[in-house]
Image (cartoon, rainbow, N blue to C red; front, side, top):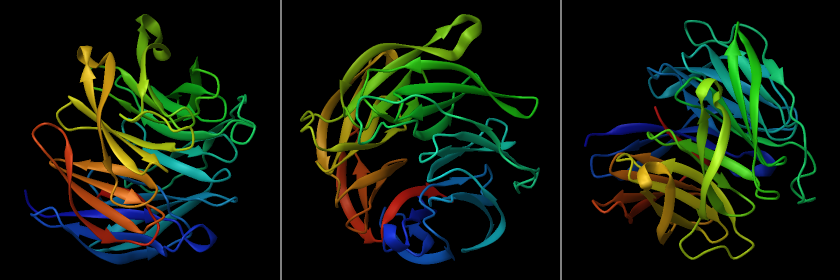
Length: 341
């Protein structure tokens, strides 16, 4: 396996010790090298890369939030546009077809679609869908808190709402973001991130309950507009301690394993996929290589874990059995996410 370049999003200012978006390189032996500051920015915590790699997008996770677009020019980033969004945007992704950037605004509970031109630059103002609802956890669920967006196989856009215990379904129709359905999840679970398995099942990681819910599309004309829960399992092999918070969920490259991170317990958990995607079983926890593993990226035979509070991106080698083994760490200030360039 040859060398590869990654972008690392960080927290800055009062939220962390980072200065912006960093560039790191993975060698053929899996070791990360760097980091190099590619562009200064205010808390560019989550990142997304346009297919082809020529444009990088970043949230600006502030009360007066925004999104940034960068042209990738060698090892540097040149800002080519910015848009205001809702409060504390915490995740973004590309819509199917690449015509819109999808943004989850945690603070305001909104989901929005920012139109993109053929070159990947912003071309208009965002289309916004308001959130609604709340949950029983008064400290975290006082109102809607959109946390992630991700495309489903049929072109539906799925979004988790931690505050309202919902997975919301959207479509982009005639250039506008339309709500097409909602799936209610167990009260107080706090859905954070999700991943769509090749089988079509949707794996939802709950931050507050520290579980993984398996959902399937209702089928028929509704497709992914309506989802049905079919299984639930712990987010860690050791079970919940009642205080740790689930962080990220990612698919393994073979489709037979899923990986989650849990903050507080500071572990990465390997889950085995059962029943052709209809169930998961946590099989092993391993120390995350630092403190507060907010996100992780599966990089073929490697995994990189962003340990936010210890300022370390830890690397693991994934064995033939799907279990990761420690393979070193790189100091990066307040890392939040790692994405391939």
